[in-house]
Structures are given as C-alpha cells and as structure tokens.
Amino acid sequence: MKSLILRTTTRPIIVVLLLISIFLLLRGHDLPGGGFIGGLVAAAAAALYAIAFGADAAARLLRVRPELLVGWGMAATVVAGLLGMLAGREFLTGLWWVIAVGDQELKLSTPLLFDVGVYLVVVGVILRFVLSLEER
Image (tube, rainbow, N blue to C red; front, side, top):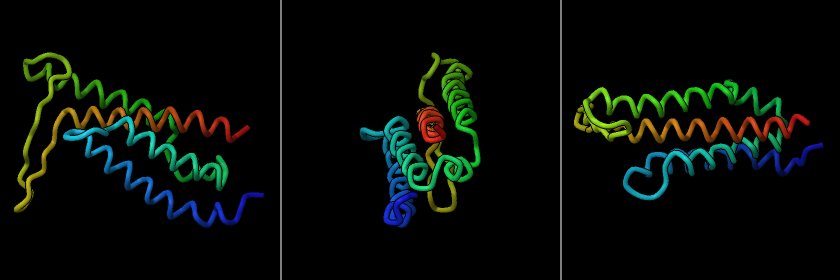
C-alpha cells in the first residue's frame, strides 16, 4: 500500500519540479543549466510520480513511450546540427532568429533546439530505466 502522505504531496511537488525543469532548460543559453539538468529534474518528477502511484499510472500520465522521447530528442539534436550546415557553416554552428510577436520579440536558436533534444533524451532514458525498475 502506498503512503497517503506521499500520494497527497506528490502532485504539487511535481508541478514545481516541472516548472523548475523548464526554467533550467530555457536558462541554459546565458547561464549554467540547459537541457541536461532540466531533463534530470523533469525525470525526477516523473520518477516521484511512479513511486507514489505506480509505473502504470506514470506511463499513462506520460502518454508517450520513453523510447519515442529518446528518438525525438536525437532527431532534434541532429536537426540543430544540420541547420548550421544548411546555412553554409560547420555542423552544430549556432544560428539565431528574432521573430516579432506583437510588441515582444521571440528569440529562437539552434542551441535551444539542441537543448530541447538533450532534454527529451535525458527524460526518455531515465524514465525507461525507472519504469522498468518500478514494473518489477
């Protein structure tokens, strides 16, 4: 039987952990952080959910198999590298774009795409590991 206290406190803790992971993902371009540490925090949130509610509940919450996350992440990192080559530069050369959205500017870059790819790979690998352990 799972702990009532753990199950009750898990949901708000997961929300906080996921917000922190997104902050770390987006912060990584100017300061330390990025896809790897953000992915670790997001995977920790999912692992906590799996511990509190079981592997089946965590898999249903995720809605995507962890292997697909790894595949999408690897694809994003390769695309981030190839975009530099398509621009006539070396593989993994950083490119930046600024898009006007109303009065705001949206800054997009290949390093951000690379970090998102790393984020997805880290989350996918750790969740596959945690869910397989929890299933046993």
